[in-house]
Image (tube, rainbow, N blue to C red):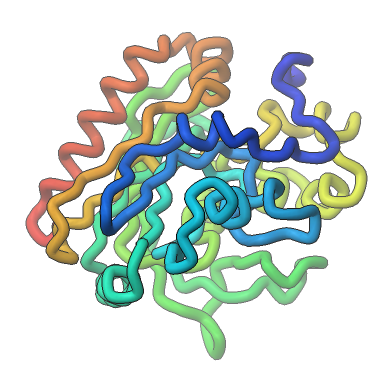
Length: 279
């Protein structure tokens, strides 16, 4: 089934609306700015001006030169992203990320119906067979890094699984590459999905008939649901709600109401972020 016409993205992503950006704010205090990023917006500055990226838009609206990202999300991954307002807080949080002291809970819609939790303990490195340098894959040897991901099924129906995703490590494209290795790819993934050529095709031509034929969703169904900063000495657990586009897909294709999905995600987040050592 092709994506509904109203869900199709424009060939060129829209510019950020300043009023919308303010509505995405989850926290704004003297130390942090935390945003619920939509799944169509690139994080870092682009050639299309300040309103084409989260970094540029934040600088325009909040006028704070010291703001810096603690970590990044891929353009098509939605959810919680943290910016530090001072060099001291930024350094503190980035060191905590490097020491794996920042808890993260992701959710994804996967292809296939997963019935039990699966943990993938497979090293990742650049995919030498790919036509784009950013693509990763399970590969051993020089240049690879240890990577561990747990996929927890929360709800499965209609050939798809809503999965909570727990990261033990934090490698580039880790969730998407491990899901591909499992054979249960993240729905809508243009790079790790049924044909990696869709990634370059989308970058140069926008959404095409081939995308409609091969992908049931117009962006990758991956969402950063919560971040736990307590391991860095900051008493914050920040959560981004289940986004509307993924909620619509789950309702339409899985028969999963948005409220029920949110309750399942909240329960998973609470369980993962209260584990010993998670904070």
